[in-house]
Structures are given as C-alpha cells and as structure tokens.
Image (cartoon, rainbow, N blue to C red; front, side, top):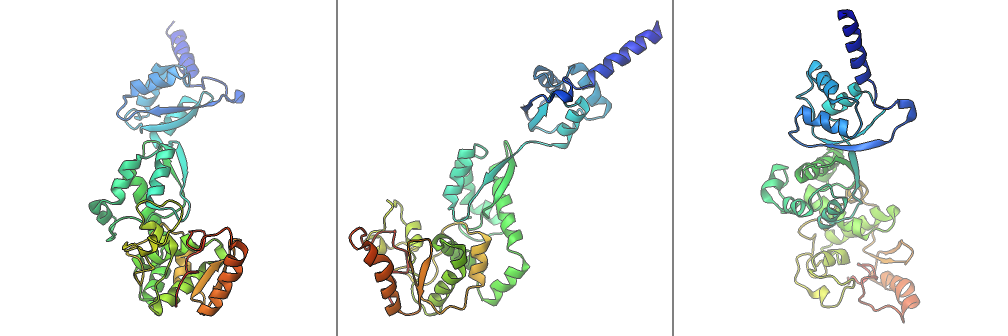
Length: 343
C-alpha cells in the first residue's frame, strides 16, 4: 500500500513538472508581468491562471526545493506552455525579462529623445526631461554642462518594461563615454578643445550634413571660420535658440539676441544643439584639409564648397537663385546656412 502511494505520488509530481502543453505543439508565447514584491504563491497562482503550469502547488514545491522562492525577479517575461516548470523557474530567477528596443537616431535634441521615450511607453517623458536638466543628476554623471544635450549617445538600446528614467539616461551617457575612447580624448587635447566644445561643434555638423561623405568637409569649413574668427552663421543653431520655430527662418530671427544665434555671435554656441553620432564626432576631430569657408546646398543632399566669397556667390546663383528665383524667398530655412555667410 505504501509503495503504491509512493508510486502514485511520484507520478503526480512527474506529471506536474512536465510542460502544460507538449512543446512539439509549439504553443504561443504569452507576456507575463511579475509585479514587484509578489509572493511566490502569488506568482505560482498567476502562472497556473495563465495555463503556463499544471499545478501551482507543484511549482511552489519546486521553488522551495531549489531555494528559488525568494529569488524571483520582477518584470515582464515571455513564456509559453511548452516550457517545463523548471525552465520557467530558471527564467524568473535569472531575470530573463523581455527587452524592448528603442531607436534614438543621430541629430535629435533631448526634447525629441524624451518624446520618443513617451511614445514607446517605457519611460516617463516629463521625468526624463527633468533629469536631463537637473544639475545634481548631471553632476553625478561626471558632466559639468548645464544640460545633457549632446551627451545622450544615439543608438538602438534595449530596456525592460518599467525601467527607471535615470537608468536609461545613464546608459546613454555611459555609451558616449565608451565611444569617446582614449584615442578621441587624446585627439581632443591635441586640438586644444574640450569634450564639450567637440560635442557642440559635432552637433552643428550633424544638423548641417545631408551626406555622410561631407561631414569632414563641413567640419573643415567651421574649423576654418573659427580660426579666422568668422561667425559660423549656421541656421540650425539659430533654430535651436528660437522659442517658437515655425519652419522658416525670418530676418528678425537672424537678429535675435539668442546666445545660439551664430550670425551675431562669433565662436561656438554655448552648448550642443543636438546629440551627435560618432561620424560627426570624428569629423569634428579629424576635419578635411579643405580651405573652404562657405557651403551651399545643391538641392540633392550634397553641398558646393567654396574658399572665397566670390566663388560662394557664384555657387548660390547656380544652385539656389537661378533654379528657384521665382519660388524661393532668400530668407527661408530651405537655403542652407553658411550660404548667406558674409566675409
């Protein structure tokens, strides 16, 4: 009798530890969220309710047997009924949570990045923006700038549901630190620039470049203008300083007292106007040997570069005024910056 009961108990346990559905049937995956501070009994009940395990009692016993009942990590998990309870338990105790990809393209401002956070639903937009401008938090990252504009490295990241905004932002800043390695730090010092200045100029190049092959040439134009103390005269910097940009740059905008108005103020703007990628950062540090001081859009994604103002005027006539004399106003933002530049 005892032996029979033992065999029966063994068969029940064995049955309970098998997948709820044979794996060969390829049952669909389910997204299961384990709330923070859930008890093991609550988790077992949830898994049974979702028909991912056969028995909550057997799963509870399994967790206690492996001393895993207090090691469950909260989060979102992708599970299916073809997984054995032991496999499910392993995922829960090792924190194999679902990671959601989030793409941050090059050249976005921190406000635009916060918008993406909000659209993805992973991070609270307002809290992210608050942290990006919080002096204490910024200082804790080892950054002395007033905001994190320019320090949020653009890339594709993967984060779990419920991730805290400070973790996301810290990850992006640390990624920049990894990309901006010792070789780039050494080059920055060689050029007698600070990292903040490099990121500032790189952000302008990022916004000005329509073709990857022109970044070094655009960088050379700005380096040349800085050396000659000629204002950068970059439209994107003016736009960044406008509280209400309507899609066009007007004459009054070019006269605005904004510190980002590089038509009126010589040198670099006070900080980055976007978050540049590695190509623009490297172009800033390794510009071409060009003597150009001007560039104008050729309306095909590329630019015509000129070393003299006379050459530049010819390029403006050829690529802007002549084809679009009737349709284009001379002060619209569709005309690339530096094409208006004066010697």
